[in-house]
Length: 208
Image 1 (cartoon, rainbow, N blue to C red):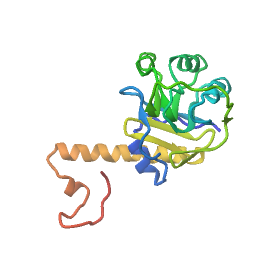
Image 2: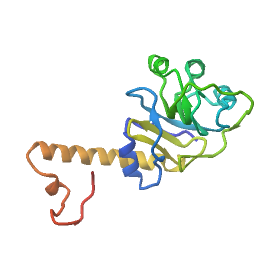
Image 3: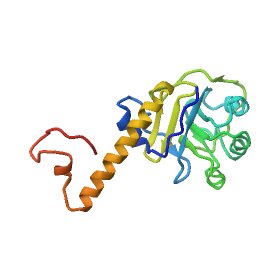
């Protein structure tokens, strides 16, 4: 199934629009400032401290996909410049990994988006081939092959493939609504008015 691109929406917009528990637990951060990533997921389950699964995934993953790897949060340099160049040459969009990476200066120079739980120089083994293309759980969120992964400086969300189109349409509506809110604020109205909020307690409305 082809999953639509994230459409430029932020993770916060997609999460709020979705109504789903689709946001990964905190700790996955961009390896370089300004990195953003959106595309269909290619899941990988490897062994922390071993990066053979990632080498295998770069060969096996279809072009236009995001590698999404569970390495159990191990603070080792599972990914760096060499794998990033290999991934770019094969048309892969980026990497989200619960585990460590290194060569962050080179990743930034390559403009290869990487989101990881740590930056670490420690070496890795190459003994465990990993499980490729099968569902994983990334920081509390299920990820299946073809689900929509979106990552930015606010976090990482994963939308089930069957829900992605619906959520993107709702995100479009949410952006239009927020544009109206911003216009109202610039015209002198208050958030209390625009969100129909009571200063003394909750009363209807929704938003930030």
